[in-house]
Amino acid sequence: GRVRGHGKVADMTATSVTGEENTAPPWTQVPSGWPVPNEDLTEHARMVVLAALADDGLRPAHTRLAYEDETTLSNLVPSPADDVTASDLLAVAVQVPLTPVNARRLLVHGGHRLEVLAALLELEDGDLALAGPSALEAMEQLLAVMARALSNGDARKSHDGLVAADLLCSCKRPGLFPALSEPVRAALGLSDQVHRRIDWLLFRALLGDRDVMRAIDDLSDRVRADTRRTLTLVGPERLPILCAALSTRFTNDFRSVDEAERAVLSGSEGIKKSCQIL
Image (cartoon, rainbow, N blue to C red; front, side, top):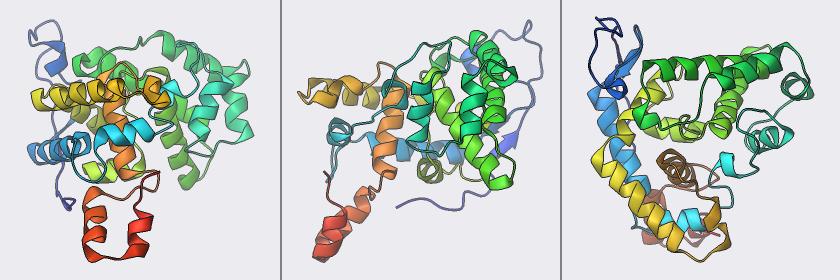
């Protein structure tokens, strides 16, 4: 089952030396003043991720991804990497409602669009596992300008704007930004985080974990060996594949494997039907 109540999930830390003095690899460094995930949160998320990538149970990961029509937002309707198009907004609108104002801000030449395009030019796509402080700060800048363009005033709509900005960033830079729905963030223990710094540092650590890397690569091989048409939608980077595995386990009206197994054991036909896969 899910682990609840992690207590304090982030410890505030600041780098004690300047970038010139710090000789540690960039992917082990944290921007000054950023909170870092503690060991309890990291280990909990690692267990959740490995379970989502597992090739066992009623719905093994490769089966979920082979049946899933939208394994990654970035591959749903591809568009130029340094532009925002109607195709990008369509990919986001599959999960989060967007208003005509949101669309105009991002598609019509003006302040919001120019801000977003400038931020995109400052950040090439890459591998989150190797992201250093400068890349992480550029990610935060891109997310901020996306969120401003997609915000709509009140608190609830502003939250939707942040979720939409998250998804749009993952469309444009799929190797850097995790595409995490609210159910996925809850399962990972991230629901109480008010910004995305913890998310990115946590996923950077997960993508550098040897067991997680091996599980993602094994899953990728299994899905690519499948002959289904949707096979081609699985992205080449580890991060989109990991996010697809998490998304198909915890969202899209799927139940957890544990719940499905309990339903079968209980003999309840009604619950069984609710847990069936396509």
